[in-house]
Image (cartoon, rainbow, N blue to C red; front, side, top):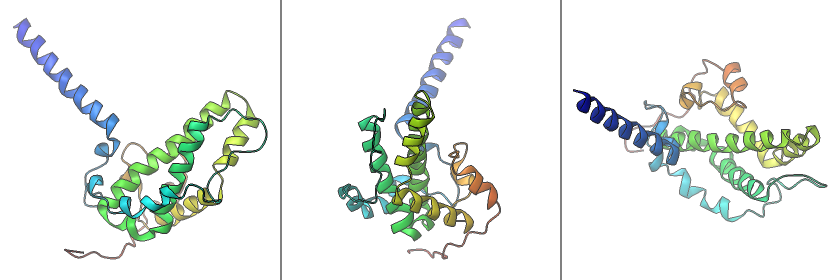
Length: 194
């Protein structure tokens, strides 16, 4: 009997470990499954925004702040990439979020966008308030502000709701989602084959 319990424990451990590893590699697989959320792998907004990632010289993307700072260049580079892509997903391709597969991709990507912002702010806090101000400056480019404005509109119009994020609502979006809780989805009605 002890051997069977041990074998079942090992099998359960392998299954849970496999699931957790998959979620770490593909966080989009942990998104809620419902009519609003499609399969993120089928998102058409991804290829539509490839060009945005090729133009990282856009002067309206984040810039390294002037003066001394402790901002890691790798973090800065990732912030620029995340901003360029997120801007395309929610500003340039405004109606893409109405497609369930695109919504799943965008929700997952917003987790990465806000996650990087939170990580950089957390690292900056170790160096004091002046460093936090530098990181906030980096994340307040024209494109970042456009993303925030577009997200507020998407949430107000019910295109994004708290349930879309499941258990992983980005802290920055929580006040917007609370303010517009119960918003009716104003996406155009999609018919089969469209």
